[in-house]
Image (cartoon, rainbow, N blue to C red; front, side):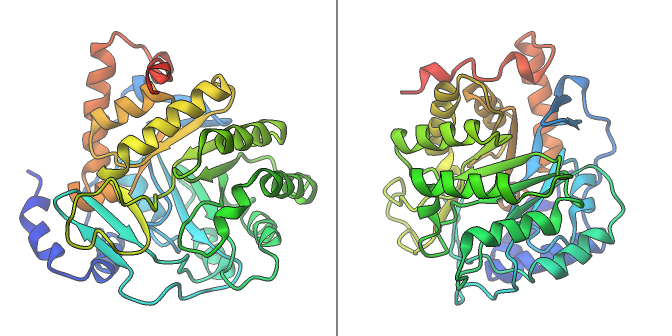
Length: 351
């Protein structure tokens, strides 16, 4: 029996940021479900030169400081991405800065890359027992005089610890960060990464992009990524488009919108990316995933892997276990032998 639905009202009566800290503390203490079932072979795949036992990942933002990656893996996630990590510690934006949209099963946040900084988080990750697949999401400090070099710093700090690195240039909560997605800037950044990355850095490097870009901008990012041998795209970050919300409490808060309201927007962008890239670059689908059917739709739109965070807030800590069961069943009903059989088959249907 899932007890989360009984304790959820108490959690939701607490300030969202305080509730998050309590969740991290509880997970550290072992107060979380354990995934005791072996993932179905139908969910396993080799991608990015990594072996994933299932495609359900924890997105960056939940475990910002790399405190509980192993515990999250034991909760059924096939991979965990920590961060966003900046070179120097920073407090982030002023509080309150997280807002629940309960009826919509969404959230708005304007956290602003609050984290303890690369050196502290590096120690956390070095001290963990190495299990599962670990990604580190890196970003730039708000007051940095050279944001592009912040990414080089992050890459050099974590490439020997992480199984992959994500370059986050799409958070709406660090002023002007999204300008790095523009054609000239993204090419300059990727050229710098190619030039400055250590010779022994063999791990995959991914790029996390915004859902608020147009098709031309998306094409430019994909072209630059393929030319620079970026290994994959994460689609997408949160949106600043609140027009998809009805009039509801907190709907006008500044920040990035995540959860169910983001599902359609991020899935359309995912499908466009698959079509434009002709499947030449692996895609990770993020945005509004709450169950196995949501994951199924993301895969059919072009995702080889999926990630979630807000879904855990609303569905509870058994979400990865539940998604795996539901997704396995859906794949079997389609007569698939693997996830790859379905990746992108509906991409052309998204206009």
